[in-house]
Length: 321
DNA sequence: GGCCCTCTTTAGGGCCTT
Image (cartoon, rainbow, N blue to C red):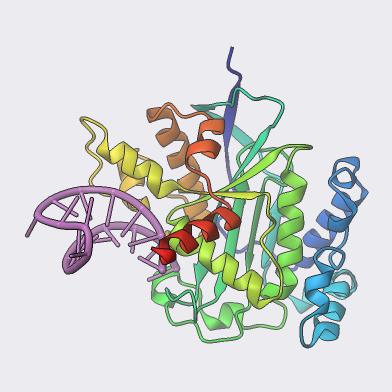
């Protein structure tokens, strides 16, 4: 018999810039909890601190001492920051009340390898992956529970050319208290690891992932001398949307996230093109599409997912033709 | 840029993401 994994839809707080001055404290609290938890310890010592993992790569880069000092001092910064020094919360790791909704995705048959599905979205300074930078990231672990969502603005140290799209301006991100990518990556990786079940797999889902979010993430990781963890699997939900559109009798007009939202009559909570608002929509779109296509989480992983390694191999094959 | 579709595959155009 196939087990059934319920998706939960999380209510606010999510789509807002949250209240005063708690973002570093929340990261700090989160880090401390994760470090102290037996679950986290079981994931391996390299993940247990901000500075511990991928240190070989980090030590090879120019200015390593500066970055190491910054990463190492995050805890101290958190402790030192006062509410009066911050105008708004930039990072949010939240504990949310969950609301069970009807849509479910059929869990994989192979229950020995539980799959953590995390929907994510990024906002950037522009559409060019080589030149532009990430300025906002939001994630939502569909298994729900404590700390199931994560969102943050990111300081890109450059002009934001497309505020008209997402409403994020330089005034909001080019601030000393907003974390830069090199500071955020360890926290980001640690968060994902903390959601991964022991011995399980992780599947990161976004819309247009292959051509947009994934290459942006790869570039940011490389720029900061980190590597995408080899056990991270990615899924582009556009491939599911194409399958739904192609299905007989489908009235889906296009495979954009907006069209999918309208097609499935999903209400928009928050501002479209803000990371967490889009994550909310995609979470529900994913439930609907997997339901329509009768896909299990293991079939998602097997038939639709890719890793950085598999993606590179495919590119090499293509280029060698 | 990657993917899909077609007026195709020795290619070109449109969609999608910001």
